[in-house]
Image (cartoon, rainbow, N blue to C red; front, side, top):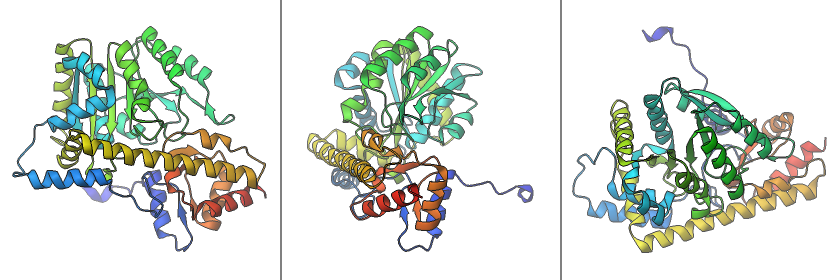
Length: 398
């Protein structure tokens, strides 16, 4: 049966990381993979997360099944983290959340809900968007189309083109929006622009599906949730996919949540039942451990405060690194104005350099970034920044 199968190509991002691992260049630098790294190049465990995990393990007296929807404390506090206390209290039974295996699981379960709710659903994604959005969402039966978002010429959001694209989307379709820290560009829309986007969604009766993978990495926890909260206040139905991989550092624990908000409790209950049914036919229920950690942490004021402080330090460090990169490149060459790099949000941004420069950096110096020119800002350090600035400037000056 399996002898006729062809070997499929690896995921572009994971495949490039594999190439990096096989590179014998002792001075190689990896700016391609999507994990936070500290100054030592390690992906650390947050101190508050470690404390919560230790408390969780000490208190556990069973490994029996947890509720199918997930840890109740996790679901309550993730809802509050995304929507804020006041809005969460107002919505009550109009919002339902289900724990998922990471943000990918949340996206897939959201897509399953959409495919159950309406036949031949078309979902519109930003151009560009995270590459894995396509297989994740298309595999649930959704048709994907693009709306305008980023201008390679200005290295920023082309908001006029974005609005025009959204206004042309057929009534009743679904729009995938990045809640903050746009991946791969790092270019976000402002709160005022969010307001205009939500007005178009309301006018065109479009349902937002908001992907929140980096809450706290952009401008702050509340600031990064602005789009989600305003959409929930102003629109009848909102779908949200959230990840705890980045802001809690729980990558390998695979913990996220899909959240649905509708006009009435009965509709919300129905939507939740379809998510649970889709999960049952796939992985049955999400792994518990990561959700247990987050639920315990967010229910403890001291641990929550400590986590917020650590998260703020991570955000500020990335901001310093992107500023130093932009200033260093601008001082070292004049071909490209890299000021836009300093203005980007979150873990990723485009460098906006020609493809041949990307390939030269990889082949000659072992500096790995995606062909799209996306870099992981957290892959920068005080040790490799001067090297990267020197090598990029050298190749650009040829």
